[in-house]
Length: 160
Ligand code: 4NP
Image (cartoon, rainbow, N blue to C red; front, side, top):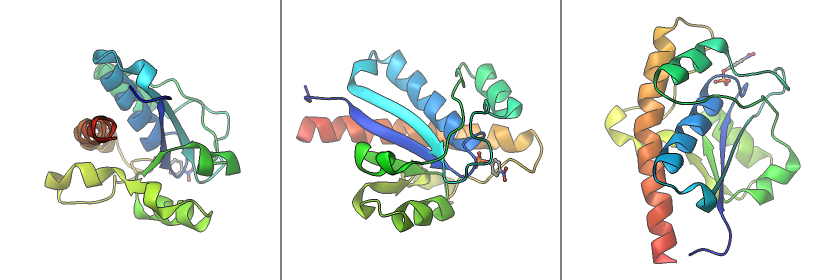
């Protein structure tokens, strides 16, 4: 067993649509497998416009339909996040660039869709300005990718 939980941070722009969804999906997966003690999970945005807000109602509603409790409060990335987390999982390339620009060790900044190569895309499209179908697609991508991410994190523990 590892000596402490692996710390995973999901990052998007506003922290009200995509990264709260990814956080909730990842929590569902670890809870289904009784792995809550092995992971510390959080999400944040590179922008701070929604600090303190609940997730977008459309993200919460589609999450609830799929059995995910999306109950995070939006917050902006802070300096502490850069060192604290073992893996920083970004929804798009802009977030990825922003995290590197803040000085995060590039080795721990990843794109979520690296774990969903069949999707043929490498960014989770931002659904904020679109319709509800964008949130359905967003969860399809996030659910598939989070399965792959969890698999990699667990195999890294075994290899360590
Ligand atoms: P998110 O979506 O990055 O997936 O949370 C957005 C939410 C809000 C804004 C942009 C993207 N905004 O500009 O307020």
